[in-house]
Amino acid sequence: MTTRRLLGLAREALLLELALYRSLVRWIARRPDVPAGATPIGYAQLVGPMLWLWIFGSATETVAVELVLRHVDAAWADAIRLPLLVLGVWGVLWMLGLLASYRVRPHLLHDDRLRLRCGARTWVDVPLSAVAGCRLVEHEMPGTIRSVHHEDDLLLLGVSGRTNLELELTGVTTLRSSKGELVADRVGFWVDAPRDVAREIAPLISTRP
Image 1: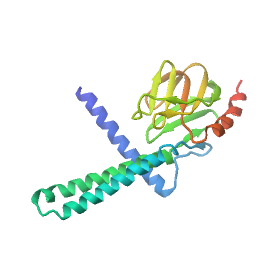
Image 2 (image 1 turned 90 degrees about the horizontal axis):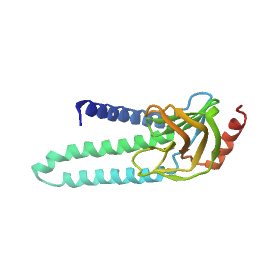
Image 3 (image 1 turned 120 degrees about the vertical axis):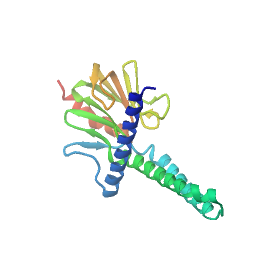
Image 4 (image 1 turned 60 degrees about the vertical axis):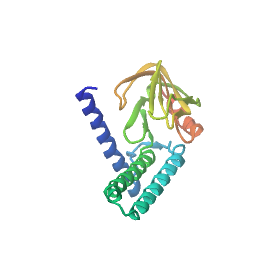
């Protein structure tokens, strides 16, 4: 792996870290990242319970390790106690920030486009003028780590490796995204209430020339 590649990965990791903390601050302050004139579309219900389990488990583990090491009368225990405590607290904050990013950064329905988002930094803009239809279609993505999957003009922006709503475009379309320009003729994404969202998008599509 080249030095430039390593620096790029380090930069992305830092930007993600900062974005997660900004999301956590927004969540605490109850200030979702929804600009004026945009309609928010939630997608956090699927991933919420799983993240809360991870957060609870990580917090419990951090406290348990701290209590055990405090009662170990040995130099090695004193040496690792603080680093493990810092690592444990960081892990809990990181996961809280991740959960917050799903909560405060919903999809955004504008008059002219649908901005699909996932977590702190991932987004795809779909012009409504390029949308021919919206239907309930489920897709399983190959793995749950990456939120974006692009193959054969099908673009998936998933939550926990799943999508439940699909936009059929008028043709192969170049879309702006956080990953650069992506070409697709179908876009799948996850929402909490797919039937309601499909009904909300339908009139905006039908009024396009």
